[in-house]
Length: 115
Image (cartoon, rainbow, N blue to C red):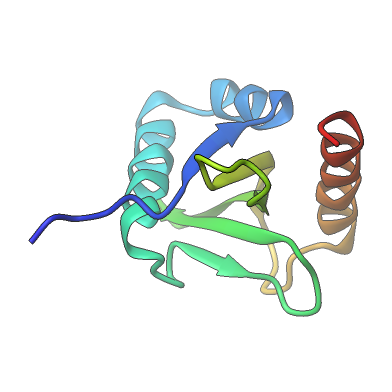
């Protein structure tokens, strides 16, 4: 049975900067989980935030919860893209609203430029 890629991931500048700032082993784990999510759509790895169009890539590593927020761009005929907006270390159970707002602003900017 062939495993089919469900989407491709594009990393926005802020997401790349976050990944560059963290330790290499942590970055490897996050990228491994993102790659795995591309094929499985496992909600433990990639989950929609309730009441928004924002999704989060989820990684638990060394007792810390790492998140990269993202959104879908299905407008490309040949590719389904998920755009990772930015990342942060989650300190509470609930995703901070300022992080969701930041992701929504990046999403608006992205679609304004690409429409």
